[in-house]
Amino acid sequence: MANQARKPKGSPNGTGGQFDHTPNQPNDTLPALTDPEDMPVGGETMDKAETIALNLYDRQRDWDDLPVGGCYRIDDLGNYVTEADWDTVWAGHELEKQAWMLSDNGQYSRDQVTAMTPAEIKNTYESEDFHPDIAYYTEKDEGDYDMLTPMGSKREEALWETSEYLANISKESMDFEPGEQVHATAAGFVSEQEWNEAFAGSQDYEKAAYELSQRHPGLRMANLTPQQVFAMHDSEKAYEQYVYASNGAHSAEADLERHPFMRRAAALYRQNERNAKYAGYGLDDVIGMRESEYAGNDGTLTANVQEATLRILDSPEPTADMDSMSTIALGLNHDPENTVRMLAGQMSDYSDARELKQSLREQLDSDNTYDQDNAERLSTILACVENNADGTRGAGQLAAAMGAFASCRQGDTETARREAARICSARIISLGRPAALAYTVADVIYDYLN
Image 1: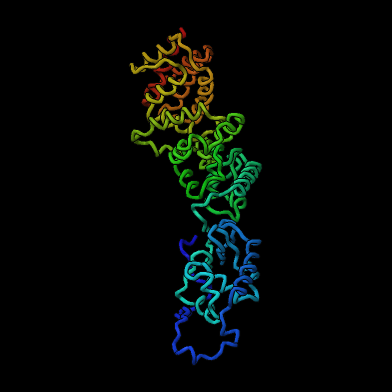
Image 2 (image 1 turned 45 degrees about the vertical axis):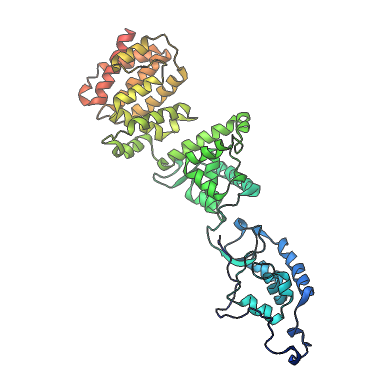
């Protein structure tokens, strides 16, 4: 939106128009003022102008609701009318329109305008020296909006209607062509065309507001300005600062507690958002696409695997989270020992920094409680990874070994014994570090069970 007042539309480039009541000759030589054009317009004209202007408020709009094109700001409260509505209201009242624009609009008071003649009003209105402060002509461009005005309840309601519509038309990731551009919803994915149709005529910040509201359904979106929406959409830290600085006044945590499905929807949206770039691809393709990312493990993989493991354990649909599964597969291939420690650590509350083989054995020997649900989830995920991970270096075998470890922690000793025996007899050590570590894990399990 314009930061300063613009000239009234149609103002000429020339100067002139500034009225001057200083006599240029003795008063006794002036002719009598009998022609209305030579007389001040007076208060009656101003009263009529203000009455006509009241009709503008029947057509007022917020800046964000205006169509692209010419428009007029009509007060200091951020109300506007389209150029077409402005012309309709003032049709046949050119003098009153100009007088109303001049009056108390930054340079001339109402009393000064009432003392002007019609010609002086016209010249002053069209002068380059007139710079209106409050009511003025401007133009709205595509994507132009007030960054500092809250979006309000009307737009918040429209946002939730769009959210419900997108959820209803969502599809699963495999319903798209590999590499097709898609957008996440809490229920799946929508195509680029469906996304654009849902947000036709919307501003850029409204699209960002949708994504922010899906990640954080407790936010009171009506209170947010576009500037805040963009900041929190781009930075989780900005979101935390906004919410916690108000002691939770900006979020509806109580509502989320009463409606846990909102939390699940947010978790699903985040999961689908991570996986949107993999729509149409199977897990084996995704792993292949990502192999080059960690060919020379630069130290970030360990942290990424840890984050992916925790996401898997918290995920509403862990086997649909190809981003997390492929990250674990990369860890098994390029950072095997740290990945094994992380996975094993999520199946038991026992952990230390000792030699890996001893640590694994002591976890199995320990009477400490363990999270059976975690073990079950990881067992399922590792079975998926096993079937898709790189077999040339043994990452698939390492996934199978960790799956057997999970089975053992669940109490499914028969499955654990069978898998451990298979891996120990497969003579896969020569494949590389992942395969050698798979043999170590399987040997620990087989020794423990026998």
